[in-house]
Image (tube, rainbow, N blue to C red; front, top):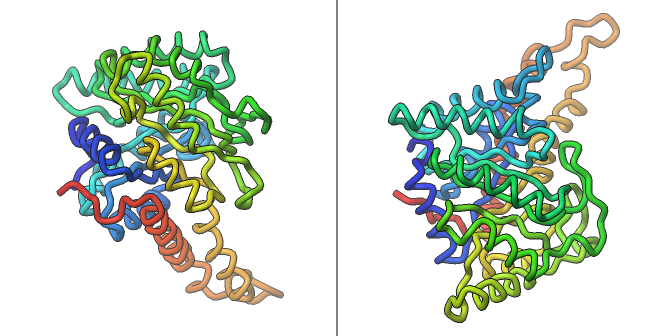
Length: 343
């Protein structure tokens, strides 16, 4: 199937919300990690989301220039071609973009899609993220309003992060403290500024103790039940019926989460869960194993010639792809998206 159209992407999110599952959103940094993600989704018979962070885009742009827009556009165009060979729908997304990188990343990418839509084509990306969590909420929402208007015109969904996620990702760092919990007032102010779909669709990365990076279960205090409070507070404010879930939530910093925490988040409106740290490790682990096991082959030790079959990147690259795709399959199972593809 091709990359999801705007209509299919909206249907994907609607279906996840109604059936209480979420799509893994897999960060990719190369054509090989892209194939690993696509393969994992296909084997799970799950539609999915592939995303590129600012650091990932810079890496994709090459170390000569390190140009984020070039890297993101190049991989997105590549994805539009190769995704047709996988029997699932895939949405392309750009991950965390702070204020100082908007002009070098999200705004130029929005312009690319605006031109495509004017020409009668679909947008290059299906959603973009604005990470204003380091700004005051007022400034955060002001920028979000501008971006949401442009995204809506380009048939793109905006993701906004209104309060911090702890830890560090691509140079954006937040302390692990009580600020990692979004309040009902934060949620109401967001709805007042961005609407509830009437001004354009957006995904909301609310904080319930989330932390980026590596941690073991129990080391971070997650409160996914907080998402229910946020939905209930906004629903009451806007006269929505009991049990309504006005927001489409995103789960950030989910590495190490317990199955119970994930299921609680799904029940309370999470439709997208970012996965990066775990898939990075899954990709690298078999490569390290291969290098240790074939030390004399991958290196020309003591003047020898090595073994081309062991240092050929295709040899260890296939192992890396298979391992990462298996982790994506596991993520689909954990998030209950297995077997839910839209045919």
